Image (cartoon, rainbow, N blue to C red):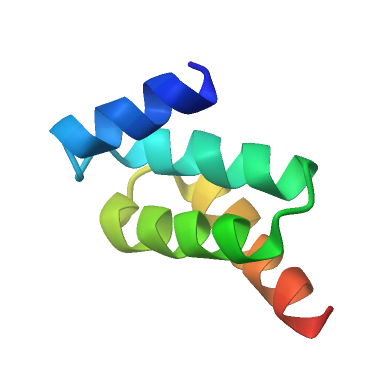
Length: 68
């Protein structure tokens, strides 16, 4: 799923957790710190106990980017 697809998916279904995760990954790679943190937080909030490895990835991303 590309960036535009993920953004459109979230507009239609804000609870689509993996779209938040994909955007967090993307913005982390392109060094858009604020968006990466925001989408990670959204993902963590919506994922609950689902997707534990992705939740841990986002938690680590947030910790790392907040320090920078």
